Length: 168
Image (cartoon, rainbow, N blue to C red; front, side, top):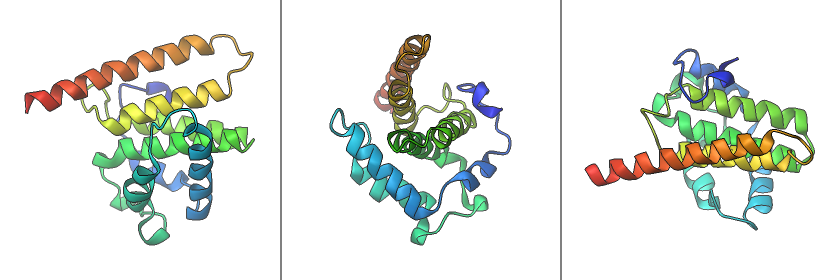
C-alpha cells in the first residue's frame, strides 16, 4: 500500500488517487464538518482556502476532475483534501471511510517526495493527519508517539519551506 511509503515518495500511479474522491456534495459536507470541528480549536485550513483554492482544483464546475487533468504540482493539495475528508468522516462517525481517506492522504503525499518538494499544503495535510489521529486515539496506545512524530516532521518541513522563501 502506497501510504506506507510516506514521506519518501514513489511517483507511480498517482493519477489514480483522484478517482477516490467522493461526489462534490459529499466532499462539501465533510469539509464543512471539518471546519465546524477544527475551526473552534485552530484555523489550520481556512474556509477561503477550501472554497477558493482546493475545491476548484478537484471539482471544476462542481464535477470531479478527470485523472488526466491532475498535475504533480497539486498532489499536496489533494493530500490535504483527503486529510480534511478523513476528519469530516471521523466527526461524522464514518470511521471506515475516515480511515480510507487518511490512507489516501498519506498515499497522495507519498506520491511526491516531501523532503524535496515541501509546500504549505503538505504541512497543512500532515497537521490535519495529526488532528485526525488525535480525534480517533482515545485509549489507543502508541498514537501519541505517532502524533508527536508527525508534528515534528511538519515543523521540519515548515522550516525548509521558510528557508526556500528567504533564498529567493
